[in-house]
Length: 179
Image (cartoon, rainbow, N blue to C red; front, side, top):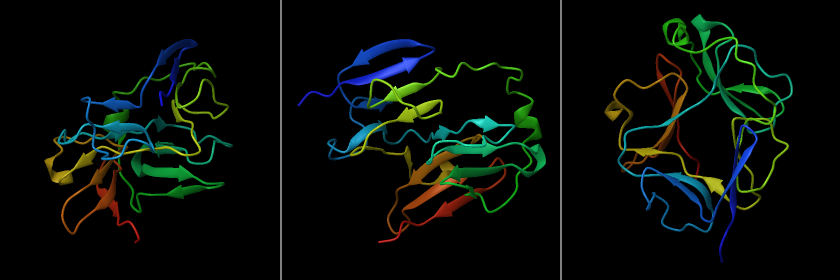
C-alpha cells in the first residue's frame, strides 16, 4: 500500500510517497509499517529540540522543547497537560543562546507535517498519525557524539543499556524503557 506524506513548510506543500527516513534509504526500523519518521543508523547525531524563551501556554500534548526561559537553568521538557521536566538538572546555555536568532516572527502555518495533509497541532515538526510513530536517532553511546547541542535527544541502543537520552546543554539525562 502506498502512503502519502505531506510536508508543509512556510505555507508551501510538497507531496512524497513513503515514510521519511533521514540519513539514508534504510533507516533503523526492521518493520516500517508503524513508522512515519526514522533516521539512519551509526550517525552519532540526534534531534535538536526547539529552544524557547517563553513557554507556550497551551501547546499540543506531546510537545518537546528546550526551556530556555532562564538561560542559566535550561531544561528539556514535554507537555502532557502540564509541563514536565525531562532533564532533572539545570544547564547554563547562555553561550548557546548567543548563537540563536532572536526577534523572529513566526507564521502560525510554518511547520512540517508528516503523516497528514494538515494538522491543527502547533509545532515546528508535527507527526500526525494514530498508528505510526517516530524512531529516534540511535547511537551506541552518547560519548560518541562530538559536541552535542543543548536540547538533543537520542536513543542509546547497546546491549544491556537501551536508554532514551536528552542533553540539556550541560549533562545527559537517561530513561530506561519499562518492559
